[in-house]
Length: 253
Image (cartoon, rainbow, N blue to C red; front, side, top):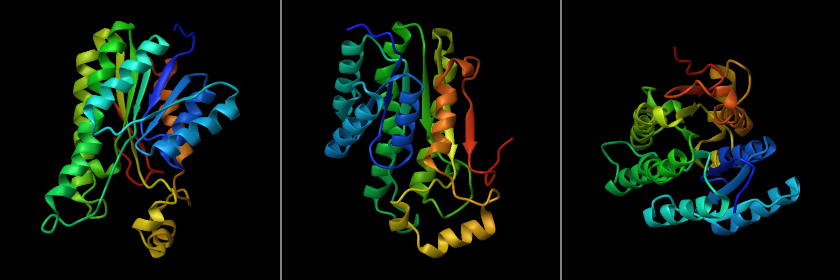
């Protein structure tokens, strides 16, 4: 089925975090957004609500990025039913903070499977469709954990997100000739309710009083704005780059 709108697929798009904000922003930008999430019911409910807000259908797919066959099936279905794929946002992530000397192999492997290999597999099956369609934009969500020397993020998460940056740069170098741009966004602290389960209240108070240059914690919409830019034609000469969205806390240059 041909579609005049550009097609965007966003992983881990349900809930109240970065993925949902990105999906809403890209939909507001006029893209035909496909939302995916490992939480099937939540994904379906989010797509239904977004469809009502927009007055047009937003497709939802249950997708666990560690299930490589499922990734391929979802992307094939999106490309086949909508005539292509123009934008891919790899947002799926997982983390469990354990010291290296105590970390279980299960924690290490799970983090790499979701954060790094999941990103690769989505790119692996999206890229042929983008190349066939004459181009596209891939935006990988990394983290300032990729380069910070800190115990706050956990070694598995930091290693996986550093890997995402290397993957981004190599994929950009390989696919520029095909009109496919590949970039990454590295958020700092972006608030969502889940963080309350990870960090104590004192962490947030200290962040605001000692760390936050702009006097606030980041919002999912802050990241969504950067993704919107990278997905747009305004960024047509931007590839292989990493854009930090941290309120200046982890500025790079």
